[in-house]
Amino acid sequence: MKTVMILGGSKGVGKEILKSCLKKGYNVAFCGRNQEEGEQIIQSTQAEDQLYFHKLDLNSIEEIENFYKQTLKRFHKIDALILYAGITPVASILDAEEDVFDSVFNINLKAPFFLLKHVLKSMVEQQSGSILFFGSAHMDYGEIDRAPYALTKSSLYTLSNHIAHHYAKYGVRSNYLVMGWTNTEGELELRTKEGVSEEKLKEKASGIIPMGRMLNTSDPIPAIMYFISDESAMTTGSLMRITGGEFI
Image (cartoon, rainbow, N blue to C red; front, side, top):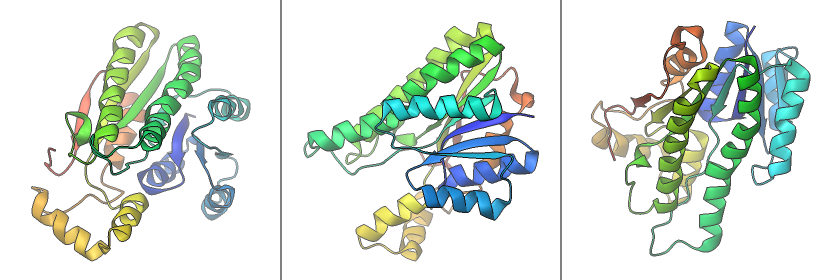
């Protein structure tokens, strides 16, 4: 039985990954800021034996290590690591404040780096493992008002390739999935603050995305499950775009 560790997992696509892993019979360790939210997911899925939730502030490097330790304590191994969690602050180079810059780098780059520091060690020891980075079309240059975010996503792509190149000899593979414009809770919350309804958002997206609609939270799941599975045993250093044809 595989054990999948998700940085995130209580919302959006992360939650869909969790549910798909349960259907496969995998164990899942996931995290989030809200203890009640995590417990509710465990209760609603009736999968107490397969799930471990860790309350986690991604700004705490100490708690990130603790998440790793508790996952190993509960399930004894980590076969796949899904680096899903992240924030998307609105900020151009001209108006980015230091606290916004630090926040997006701490959560999007520093947190996954230090979780990887620990998970990689156990994967090297067991001579196997699959790491999946959640990327963004912003990785190349990004929209003008997503400058710090774009920098973190391009750095994660470099990190994915670094792992693919240097750790393949230990049976560890690493891949980067570019997820397009998706109607996650975070996206809808951001747009609501801007005064844009979900209906208006979908209407706007349909005129921008070549395939005619924005992604839903289930669209990336088949690809993610492939990267977790042994079917992708020889797939590493790859970039997959699930964007409906959108390039930023």
